[in-house]
Length: 165
Image (cartoon, rainbow, N blue to C red):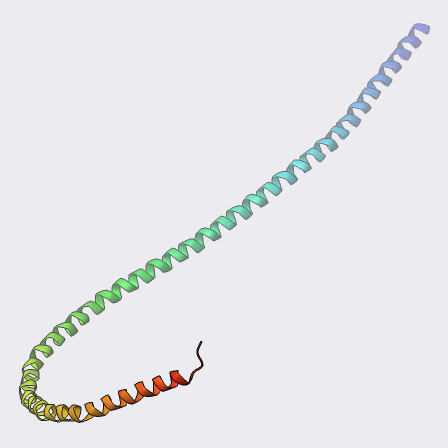
């Protein structure tokens, strides 16, 4: 019996060691799982943050691109409008210029006619006014000479009254 007991004691020791190993393995496994869970959670958080940052960056870049496209579209629209307007107005400008040239050609004879009629009047007026202007100047010249002499004498007398410097 002592042999049987020895085997059962050895079996018990073996069972005890096996049980201990199983408990240690389960404990290590659950700790490893919680460690893995913690590491996985940290990695998931990092990946989530990275995805958020990438999403924000893509959203900002997309908004910037959309705004630039709108500005480019507005510029193109304005340029197209200007070109269309110029194309529509150009024939009118050419027509107005042609009409102005025609009008100028039509008015030239009238202006020449008016000049021909006015020239004798202006020549006659100049002929009548010139002797009057000459007569006026001849009568005023002695007065201006006399006033000039008077002012010259007044300046000389004023200088004489001033104390010497």
